[in-house]
Amino acid sequence: MARQTRVSNASMMTFSEKLSRFSVALFIPMCLVLATSIVVLYSAGGGAWRPFALSQLLKILVGFVVFFFAAFTNIKTWIKSAYMIYAVALIMIILVTFVGHTGMGAQRWLNLGFIHIQPSELIKIALVLALARYFAWMNSVELSQLKNYIVPITMLLIPFGLIVMQPDLGTALSMGMITVGMFYIVGAQKKWFIIGIVLGLMAMPVVWYGGLHDYQRDRIITFINPDHDAQGAGYQINQAKIAFGSGGLTGKGYLKGSQSQQSFLPEKQTDFIFTMLGEELGFIGAFGLIAVYAWIILVLFWCAKTCRNRFGQLICFGFMLNFFIYYFINISMVLGLMPTVGVPLPLMSFGGSSLLSLMFGFGLAQNAHIHKDQQLSAKGS
Image 1 (cartoon, rainbow, N blue to C red):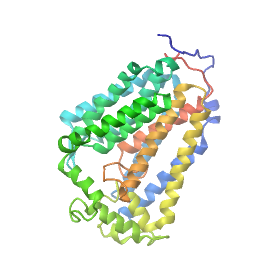
Image 2: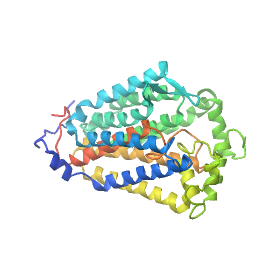
Image 3: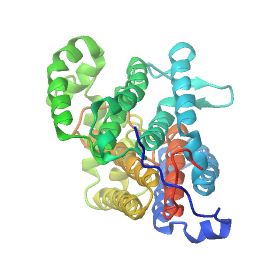
């Protein structure tokens, strides 16, 4: 089966040439969100650097090392190592299943002694990288054949099943949406999406009665009926609505959020950090953050459209999907527009695994933009 391989005719770029192609338009909004995160986490700590803001600042500094390494490494290195990175992330997911650290009722972390790592965050970026490597050099005939989707579906289903067992349904579903989005971008036939939707609808009763935990069903019921179990399954979302709604147009003022400062709002530093932002800075502050997120999506889309090699295009499109799904699910969740799931707000929520994996993804997107005019071969030569 012939592949559309393109032979690289570009010489290795110098660092100064790479720096001249660096996308400031993508770097600035990333830094704006990171700075906003420190400001909000300082408030979450009661107006103190500890326990959240200082720790997150140190993680951001490490994240910048990861970001710049990913951005300025030769893109051919990422082509050659794409499957290996996916394999390492998958092995980490498997290890979590057997020796993972349990926290908040879920077994999601690897305890390395000096740090806890959540491999399910890394696997989302690794999956994008591996799918970009897999599809980049397929021609239209290959992309129209169902058999050529068996490998990427398997690449999704193995970690998907393991992550659901942790349990971490939000991350698993986001991985599924990223993969489906990648299938659409590369040109999979529409009839397969229709078949997939039909099969999904048919499987819903089985998933409801046999695949979900009791607390997950309670969250869905609470989403449909917000007054159901207001002091139990519905407590988080009800407090989030109260906090966000009380912020009004301009907010109660920095460090003056009653729900968050008096600890009525659960997980204010992680999954519900957007609610805290809305309470203290109001609709204007919340809308400002969404506007910066939209800026990032538009720049990623532009990077993808201007990239002349398919691998770089798919990296940018895949990371764009990943980033959008992250913040869309989180914001919809805290506003009561979706059932509550454990998905952090990108670059904002306290924690290292999500932050580092996202900054790695930003670095890969920058890398694709820097090398946008370079022709690449399937072997990365």
